[in-house]
Length: 227
Image 1 (tube, one colour):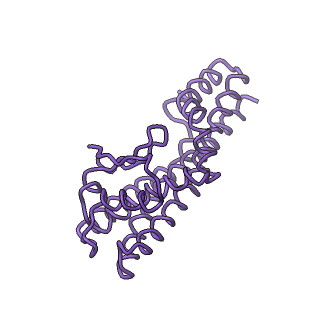
Image 2 (cartoon, one colour):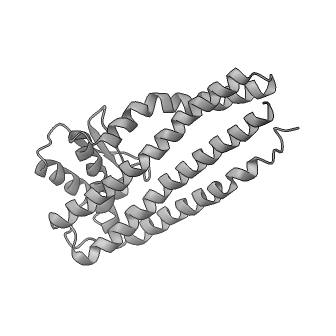
Image 3 (tube, helix red, strand yellow):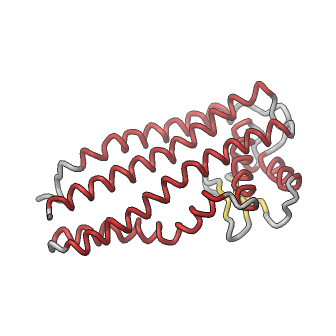
């Protein structure tokens, strides 16, 4: 049966391998540089709070989340959530990740256009990720081009979300490095280790985008079979 083995699965294999590679790079970089203490001695929480204060932002709080590598900025709640290793850690990896999340805060407060676009896409992207495949394959089974096209459109929004995420994350990392260095939280010798951690993290977003684009290509190929 086509749903047990379909040659179009081969299309997404490169992205799958890339995703596995990206995950290994993230964990490897974080494990390595979480053992290198920053010369400033500050923790991720302290740096995040200090950078918020320096920017004159008093409406965003910093909290600890139990999720490993679950660091993120929640603009709706006005909270930066840092994983335990980052929240209390004083490694160059911890400072880099904490500053990266503050980079997102600054994007939000300065009206960074790609971030605003990504935020607006969140509801539709979530719908697209959840509903696109059931709609498409229902249309494929029952030969309904309308359902297949709707699934493709919805998944296309999810792909757009991933594409927009790339400059958002790269910009947050650039801001993080500049903030850490200009405020003296890392030395010139520590810039490269921080950059390696942030670049490794960016690979996961690139891998997710590649996977989404190839999945969309796969849907288009399958759609062509029903034309």
